[in-house]
Image 1 (tube, rainbow, N blue to C red):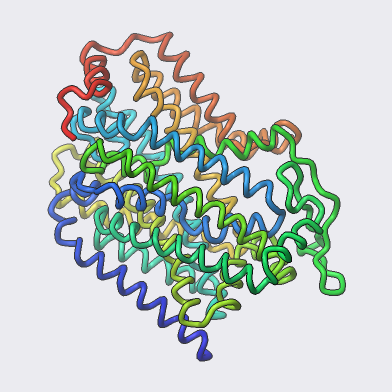
Image 2 (cartoon, rainbow, N blue to C red):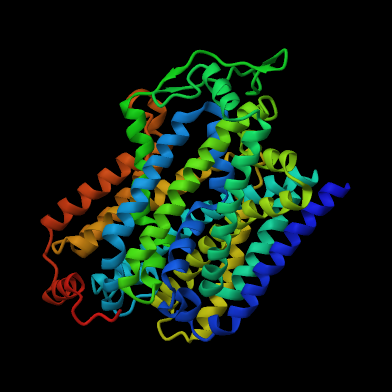
Length: 523
């Protein structure tokens, strides 16, 4: 290991030590009860709520996946996705956050998403709770795998070590940290990690642009590639038989620009719909200490999101000018952020910037693991299997579940050629279609009933798989992001089934009105 690599490692170790210290500080409080462990006793302030929601949401995808897409095929895919995410973020904070904070308290002080849906419909046989917990387990395992892929690529690229070994090291660190501190530690560290991620993006975009020859040189390079710097066109790398981009005389080769029509734009904008069903974000709404602080949180979150997404996209564009032939496959393109950092910055500073990727990965994977574990331990084990389970038993099952999920995610992440953007997009669609329509209708439509809720979840989740693995392969108009058709189908099923079956009870309607008007709801 040379001097530069050693300095990078030292900086990252310092960062990880700080993260572990946060876990130790909050461990005692987190283990007082399952409510403290899973929701932090509804004690988050506006800054921590906003930053932890966005940091846990964006993950290594923000620093690796999104720049990788921009580097590989240009502006359109990355930019329209970012725009959709920014719009979705705003409306989620604007219309969902306050009502969910109220309703989760009214619905028997729900501390997990399955809890909320089950209590919202006052169900006795816990079908909604079980289904929602199972869907969370499935999609968050895939999500955690995407984070482990990011860890593996980061460490393998930095230290020249085997990908699989480095991926497992990253997974073990995340697992130990999550077991230690719970929701409060996760949220507190996410606040710090959100700042680190933001700083890393800004530092790289400024220094990287200077090293690439300035903004003019970056724009000149982008405009020289057909479709690369267009909102309504997409660059097409020329690939050989092994899916590697061809290079002639040191110049990467591109074909004619591909068209980018309205349907494709709508498909990318549909990423914004995912926010309405994203558990790691929705839990922050439930955990804030007072609903009146949500407005400030929304402003903080939007500033962070808009700037971070814009900078991440530009890093990919700029990276193609600075290192045009450094990454010649779609999977390897996701390492452009690492390449820029290690080649543009002093070693010790590069180490802290690399900690930005680690920050993004940790802030998401600990959320995914914790929420998935809570779905099993709190909702299935205590909610269905053993209703009189003690808090100690719930915590034990939680830790066993964390280990199991992590092992499955590691198996999924073993493929070194995995593209983070693709893995995340599938899990994102799964949550958005399974819980997004259900969340919106649960909060804003009094007539929705238990049958409609079940129909919406099952149809949304099923359609994600059906569209992704079957219908989309027909091409043409069917080659759209699976979240959009699945979200629509789920919404239709909720409305139709609810109207064709028995109306909700008087007690459920009273709960709805109380949450709507803030009557008898603390905070």
